[in-house]
Length: 324
Image 1 (cartoon, one colour):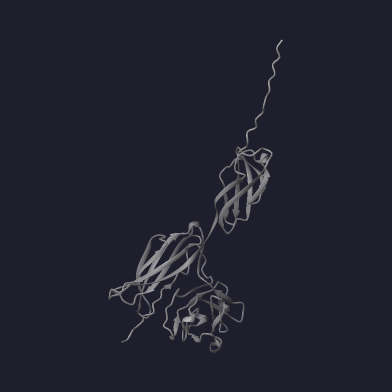
Image 2 (tube, helix red, strand yellow; image 1 turned 90 degrees about the horizontal axis):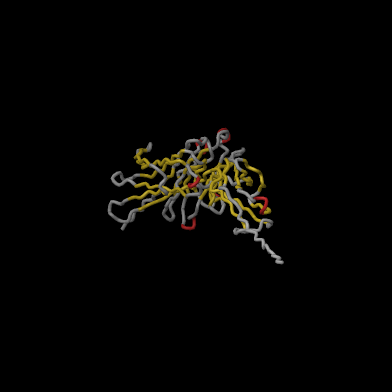
């Protein structure tokens, strides 16, 4: 009895340039996941790009190294025979092709692998996990591709979370093989920051057996000005006018807030009180409405107006009446 295993992987090809972002940055394009039979070789389709200005450094002295998640170099194309995992670089680094074949893969080789390109000059770079690194308000297009070996049952591509309108097409490679692609377009928001954006390809089998699926993802790193700026007062209840209070300003931002400033709201004027995320102060010094302002490199956010509650002061008045 013969069993044929089809090694399926999803190639993620996020657009080389998104609107509002400069092209020519350090990034790599490769499969997120590859399945391989024990004892077989595996070819990792791989291409990369570098920042503008490094083009002349990409020469014949460059070598490709593959490192696992622990940081250990398992393959070095300049010395393949002494590498932990034997193989060969089939791509041409000078053409930004880092395609590599690794031989005799075993279960203990299951790991996350990262590419490092190192040349005998200033070009030395670790291509780590891909991120979507842009500013809030930028229009973004992400492209996901998956092989379509059976045209009657092409894969279904799904984006998670649902970010906006997506458009699917069936494309043809130079070797005439087919690829299903999906492009989703959306406007980057601070709500997307640190979200994992994934594309899943689901293959329905002709024999009706359990469908196969594979997934690739990236993490969104969205830069934005301070949001949700709030003030808290401790102690929170009514306080004596001559007591000390602690004011705390909280805000979310990327990059992080670098300045916190406190103001009194004196009618239409703003009177400076102090600086710092936490401010210890006499309650009498902020007897009127006040607010805090949080700033980073992209802008500022201010809290709503707050006011400290003071304890009422009771005076006992004794009245003495004299009668004749």
